[in-house]
Image 1 (cartoon, rainbow, N blue to C red):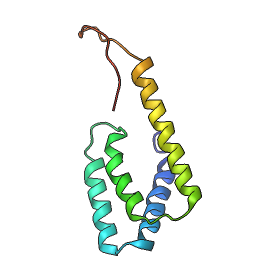
Image 2: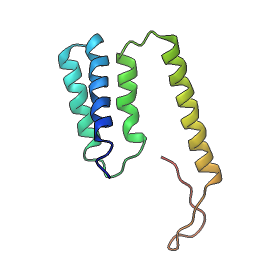
Image 3: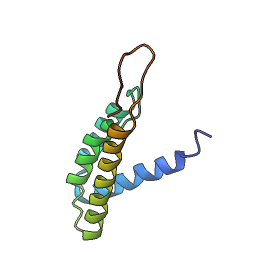
Length: 106
């Protein structure tokens, strides 16, 4: 079951590689992938904060000119921020060994 999404991951990496290969040199793309792998592989948890810097570099260096893509990206940013604020404000939790209410944020 846990390997069911492997084809999607491979497709995503190939898609990112093709997007960057159109506008960047091969050395830059190789360094980008190595730096991203060095950041994500040893990460103990899968959280959005580990993906933000590689994502920002991808967006900044892919030279997207399509207005529809920018609009979709903006909507995605707003949706993720609304979800994060909702989780922080309205989904507190408590632990037995900690006093008070805890809040989730990444």
